[in-house]
Length: 373
Image (cartoon, rainbow, N blue to C red):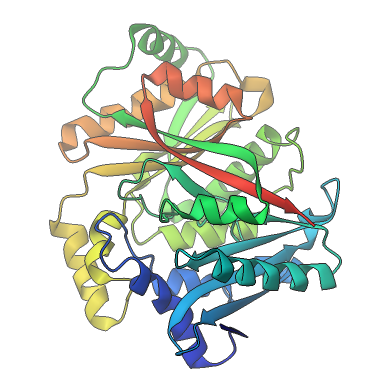
């Protein structure tokens, strides 16, 4: 086998094409857009390059056939918040062959060790954890936009190399047509009537204002979680602008208490339902197809990317009220059937309790794994 760093234009093309080869006969797989994958490795499009470094490799057999790929990276803002300096690996794809997988893992490990790392987490993203994050181990159904999909044998490849599960990522599904539990609705209606409590959906004409509110809530909500690194407004604006092409501002809600940003829920239509026929491409013709599909092809699923509530307002029922606001908009559309609540770490008991309170049912499980050198 021959492993080589991705350097040339052809290398980049091979890196993108490998999943198309591996999943050619897998009807559940949806090819991520090449432009989204490449943006991760572009310093002009991913501001994690300002405080990190990344490289990637492709693997061929002795006949020159593509059989694997991997990326390794270090986010210096987070690497040293762990007990041992820890880097990351991601974009792993490989044939069902442990020797091939070991060569990919070893190459990433050696690169990380040479830069002072003593462990690696994977598969994760060189960016925020709302995309390209986690190894799918349960629920091998078509993925929603941004969610990792892989063959079932991948877990064995990781485990045999010595990766151990760090935490589980639970995705639940909520039927739009199923009424919320009575207690959930009662709390929401009570909250919506409370003096000083107001609710507002995103306005794309005021991105900076809502990005600032998002940052304020997010950084307060997660500040006590281990290894948390605050998010900055540029990263949020970068994400908002990427989402804009598919975004429905009426699906993104903010709650305020006496004018103070207190809680949010960010939901997007599931773009995977319309990009699957594009096979990862987004040239001129594909863009026309995308615009046509977006307008005329029914998108029946939404994905809740992230929810957050300031610590001072947790257990105040704000999330319940926002779900009711969302349903008041969604039901008359007669467009959506399902809301995917993705993903929540098994360490986040409060958010899992909210999922349970809505009446959501299990959908998928990913895991984030760690290999200590």
